[in-house]
Image 1 (tube, one colour):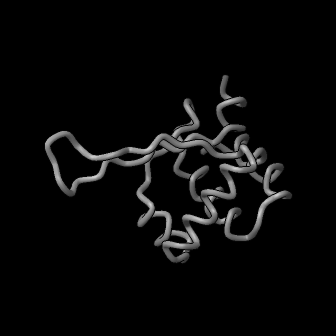
Image 2: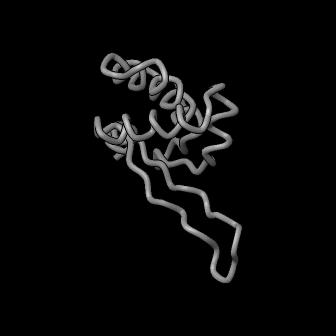
Length: 99
């Protein structure tokens, strides 16, 4: 994430909880500068933010309800029982900044 996008992140966090801020900062750091998209697993988000599974889920859902974050569920690889595909996270204000 470029420094010009970091400013947008800090503008958006005033309406978020500390948990949501940690998740949003991590996702923004991981986001592609051209698309505003990233694909970390929930386990990666939890490890990077020092949150548990429930905290990550609650934070992601809170960001989604506030229309800050959207995602497409990854699902499972075709023909695979256990291999999950990564979710496609899209930070709404980053997409707007890039477009």
